Image (cartoon, rainbow, N blue to C red):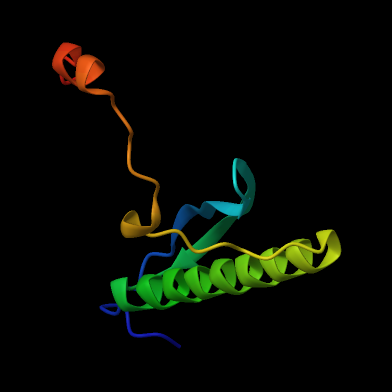
Amino acid sequence: MADENTVAPKVRTTKVTKGINRKLWTAKYEEIEIVSHVEEVIEWTTLEERQKKLDAITKCVVIDFERTRDAILQELGLAEKKVFGSQTEPTKLSEKNADEFDGL
């Protein structure tokens, strides 16, 4: 029999939505967008329990995204192209056009 002064912790419910959207450059002027989205309802009684469940959902989203990305690229025979700022082609403005460029 429970002590009358002991109060059971209140069970709370939270709707969790997490996702990853990523555009991958597969060729020049060609991209593919991969989306991994998870929506779940969790029950928790303490903030620590809630955070542990949120971290587990985050890990699941990341794993799902990586598997989905790898499967899509393999099925389509594509490879993700890494593009960094220094690899982009410089803008070529003629002297005349450069003078008229208004900075927008």
